[in-house]
Image 1: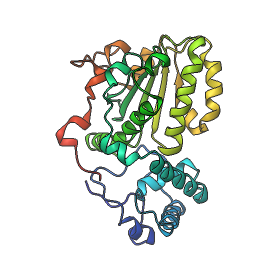
Image 2 (image 1 turned 180 degrees about the vertical axis):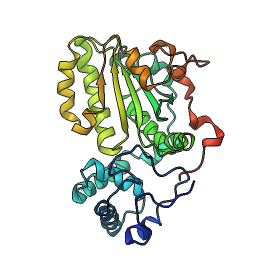
Image 3 (image 1 turned 180 degrees about the horizontal axis):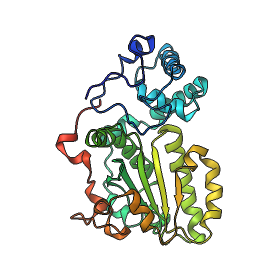
Image 4 (image 1 turned 30 degrees about the vertical axis):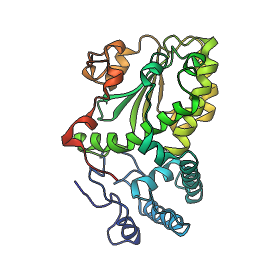
Amino acid sequence: MGEKPAGLDPTTPAADSASKYDHYTFPTTNPESGEGHPGHTTPVQDAKVSELRGVLEKEGYTERLDTHSMLRFLRARKFDVNLAKAMFVECENWRKEFKVDEIIKDFVYTEKPEVFEYYPQFYHKTDKDGRPVYIEQLGKIDLNAMYKITTAERMLKNLVLEYERLADPRLPACSRKAEKLLETCCTVMDLKGVGITSISSVYNYVKSASAISQNYYPERLGRLYLINAPWGFSGAFKVIKAFLDPVTVDKIHILGSGYQPELLKQIPSENLPTQFGGTCACSGGCEFSDAGPWQETQYLGSEK
């Protein structure tokens, strides 16, 4: 499966530069992806990948310069090299300040079971496209109670750790199983129990989490289903949309209490926990199982 860099002519300087960084051990193209994605780039876009990488190399950057990463930052900034560079540099600065490498190596979310009583957040199996499914339940959030168990910083550290695990091992494992490149996840946010009076506290956390997602982990959202949306939520969501890119907004589906038929069109019943209308009931609870291709030996590799 170690293919040549997708979308790059092997005779071009861009391909020569990419060869130093592109060491993928999973499929590198997806026939369903649109323009600007690996395997679906134009010569102009290939040149911008090379230009962005070259500018970053001159400034001393040596990590995360592979073609897939360059394309994600470029797509997030409409292939404007200057804007993509600024985004990449800001991301690298944040990674140093937030000590992301230390989080990956040392962070253990020991309070997870207690926090999950108020705010379950977990990856669980895959959707019909093969992408990891990520589920959050916002209805029981009680920040005062949660901050007796953990801190806002530790919650964000856990969020970052899970984003890093999405990049390795989750997405590579899912790509191997699906036999096509997968770069995004399918997110389900359950708003059951979220009333208008509690939206402000939920909104503040979602704003912080969205900033990390959009600014530092671009192009990772495939679909987002907001289920059990309470009356009036659409109005509040108009405020949240102001912090989101229009491309991201197009991926968002707001569903009320009758969400199950729509959700089951995207997520197989056997992969969806019973509490959401599926048939999956993992031993010990789906929220703690971390079940998915990333737990299956035949789909694991090393992306480091």
